[in-house]
Image (cartoon, rainbow, N blue to C red; front, side, top):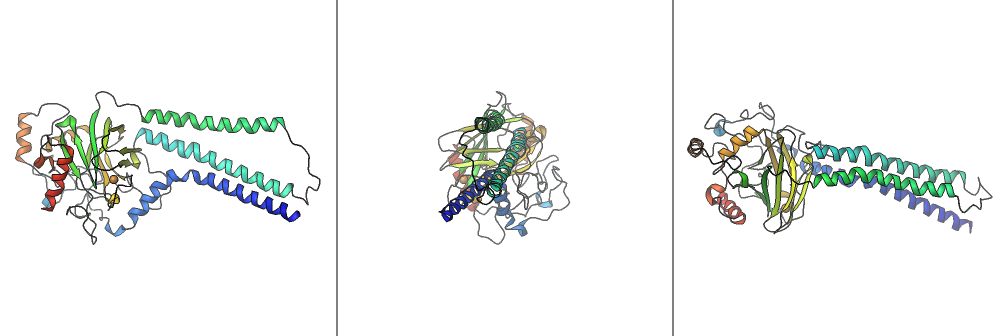
Length: 385
Ligand SMILES: [Cu+2]
């Protein structure tokens, strides 16, 4: 009898401890993503190109002789700032946020959820220890026969309700803000997931399209049609995350990002911009992307999409509006937000094609009228040939 009671009490304690541990861990899945990414990228630290002289974020400062722009002011990819827009070694927190909603969400996670979880877990642990010490058979030989206590029952009903309401208010607010449609005049960008690369369309800028492949890893088999090795240009970011052609976007304005897929389900996710949305074939998912300041921000496909799921990273390069416009004009058929192409600029961009390593889009060959799937197919065939 005694033994049975002890065993039951011990069992209850272990169960309660497990529950409180589970509560503590419940906050971790969100934080686990950056950790997983960090470990994924830190596996090959030797691949990281040694930083040279270029100032982070400086346009035109990082050009090598062979990639020197043909004309003054031509686009040169931006050199990423270490630790910005990418996972950091030994990081356990969400990545530093560069979007207003990301800062809000990070505050909810770190300022609301984590403290509540920790306080509840410690409170439950203290209650359990108190019961074990104060009310065991030796300390309390004659147990109380009390079976109801109105005050305690009201308190332990109301307090959890208030806690849940306190969590619901900011989280529903965040949810609503995340799905607020873009302003009518916002720039529209289309991202299409393919096995295993991304294509980015610019319907407001002449409807050109670029393909974006992960760079090859030194000493490892080529996974993406012979695109150059990571680290072979001074602006290259971390291995597994850097691509040949980045998604170039304007900073400091809302962007209507439409995401879809050409084959299987992918997901467009950039942790430091608080952006994650499924790319589903036959369907367009849309969200506002707002990047607070110029920089390079890395992400990955976040839906298991096949053998090379881990080899289709996302690299966003956010530029000030005037530099974004200048980049658009380096693209074949590129025009500034629905404006007709000025004759002089049209002639200039044709005179100096492929000024930089990444300025030769697949759209050159396939033409802007070709559907996304055809354009990407011809693009993937071209570098191999
Ligand atoms: Cu994918």
